[in-house]
Image (cartoon, rainbow, N blue to C red; front, top):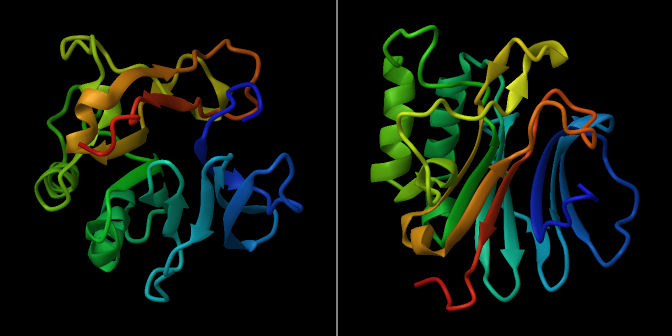
Length: 214
């Protein structure tokens, strides 16, 4: 995270942090101190835990960001219970009121992608994309970024077991559709960038919300 200096970050598979430093605030979620999900905010932003549902023991974690622009975050680390996509669909049902109560971002490791080896998208993945769009008015920042070419292959965000020959795009940042004009850039770090100790690469979304939420 340090090389990027983000205002807000969602980090999966991370250990429970020590006391925040550098003015940062952290909302950490998990049962295993060595393995959880963190939402981190840097001044002038702060983060606090949202209302965690006891009906879902993993996959999605709510946080509230307060600052020059305030919004909700649902941080995703999807586990296959019963499948990755259906776990996220279940999370959207449980956190619907939370997501609709304020401008919201759904971000993280979805562990799923629309197509596999040229096959048609799964019905569950089509349903997930539809619900995010129609029920919550959310768009994928990557696919809405200036200059995005639908004919080009999506930049991989994950390399299975650190293998450059097994790339997948499974990490997403869904933002309110009304923020589309505020997208300045979306960047995925390449496989050979040396900062990262993970088989995932960060999806870096730059927004200019200085004019408000529009």
